[in-house]
Image (cartoon, rainbow, N blue to C red):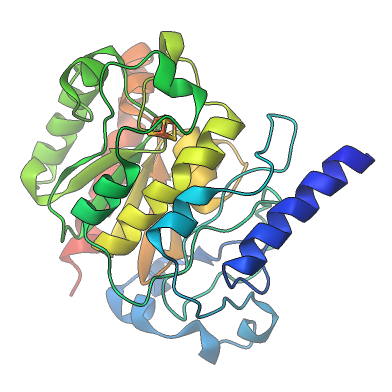
Length: 296
Ligand code: SF4
């Protein structure tokens, strides 16, 4: 690691230490089928023999301005990344032998007071914190039930979403709706949002600095909703939420501890539209979602 990179890593560390984080750069715990039940999810990981080696997070409440402030020096694409799961309870990731993490700053810790989505959206405002603001028509904050058990996280708005200011309203959104119908979940009962709230030019993948700037708002949304399950749609969402860099085809359909609940990743509906044979992956993973949510 060269000196500039090291300095930027130190900036990130300093920034998150100011927010009360004491340790990070840990790996999420892969959850076995047996432990993916809500009962298992509610089991504090502090009881785990591995817990002592897991990260601890400070109790300092995260104010709205702190979460959106960002580090003193924003990351560039070559810089330390961006991601990690929000740990809004005592639950914490435990090292996994088979997963590796970006060396990334974690998501904000839980505020003492549970923010509302309206408060987060107000704080976001007419955001120009990153360069994606230049080409957007609308900020796509998110849509759905503020107390949803299931939250979907996509990559970023496309053309239709940018036009309407709503997430997943284009062809990919129609496929998502169809998958929800298959497992008999109403769209209005879930919450849908994206890693970045503004459309990347030409629907390109969001860049690391853009994700680093925008993702604190995503984590605050998840903290506000506190769902039982977060479903990451596609690799950028999985990398941001879970902090894993394995390909989505390797880790899709697996449950991970995440905050007070679980998280799983699956392929993005837009990918399935381009590769219709892969719809089976989406169907299988949605069936796992159905089984998880129906488990008592
Ligand atoms: S992508 Fe996020 S951080 Fe960037 S301008 Fe849009 S709302 Fe702000």
